Image (cartoon, rainbow, N blue to C red; front, side, top):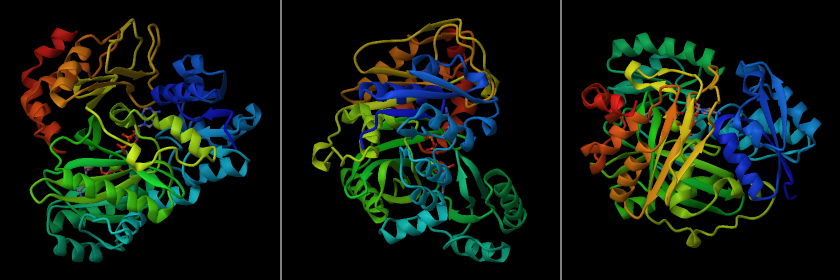
Length: 461
Ligand code: ADP
Ligand code: ADP
Ligand code: MG
């Protein structure tokens, strides 16, 4: 069935992105929103808007009954969950289907299976994808944890089976620390994710985070190359690139093929991402998890391949076979995305919502700004601090960095502090230029180099 109308069960920049894709396909859009989001851009752009509850996410964007009721009332064919919120909730996918509508994503069963990071590790192993050395399955208790730690050596990570968004991960450096942290990690995971299950992984030091964009229709599976997301703060991505710089071609081919093998193993449907850690010295890559949704950083893949991933999601969910075949998917040039957050880099990245008094967005070849902002908009304090993503493309990485620095200098958001100064400093940094970084780079750079170029903030302000 071709999708003719869709309800967007999300907010912020991704809701705007989904509406744009729907409009391009002639699909009617219904935007749900909380009481705090009546003025958001997606509400203004959608054909219809429905208030589904009070600001607290539990009462609105995580409220399955309220969203299904809105979808029924609006008579839509489908629901797009975006990222975050209910996007990786298998019960939500089932509820949408049970109400006779299409969930734009994999089946509830596939989401549950791959969303359990321990089950996903087993699937990866079955598909012949290398995983990080660590526990087989969930770790039953502290005695079992000690046996595994003695085997992998320290430091070792305790990870929540149901974790996500950089949360539910602890590093332990000794047996004493393990004994102390293991019960805490379990209690915390149970409280945060409703599942206290834990597993363990060896810490891959100085690794790069490299992930592969996959797409399937249940029968055919392709990859749209890889992204590098090594610049992270608190295990959350800050800056992403496509393709991964300095990745040897033979490794790239094996990496992308392994992600397709994993997709085939589960008969994957829709857009997904297979995440890995890559150790440059040994040229080894290790599976870490699958995200069964569109990702924040999907635009860098779109910029290098020319594919509209969100439009493709609509088509495949509507029952069309994948319009892409692997040989048609080619990568050209280089793309970088900077996440622009309402945070103050000078105050330890304290979230700082407020009203946008002036907004000036750079335009030009290879420049894209996916945003929820408009001049006069007041950013509510209840949600993620992501305001938008500046995405820049050029023929090669150096040209891309030059264009990015220029675009960042021409991006003006007045009225609230943003992470633009951080990105400008990164775009000009010699190590970043060389591509010499790993997942621990940014945090130490923030303490040394960024502190030293604080003049940048003054310059931008
Ligand atoms: P990951 O880093 O796990 O690959 P992504 O970076 O693709 O995940 O994005 C998921 C994260 O985005 C969530 O963990 C959450 O912190 C954040 N998020 C969720 N919903 C929204 C939203 N509507 N707007 C902005 N950010 C969101
Ligand atoms: P989430 O579900 O929160 O996204 P991930 O398992 O994808 O969790 O890990 C998030 C980040 O944490 C990775 O990008 C990486 O920086 C770090 N990380 C995770 N596992 C390991 C590991 N075994 N060794 C080193 N770093 C890791
Ligand atoms: Mg992850």
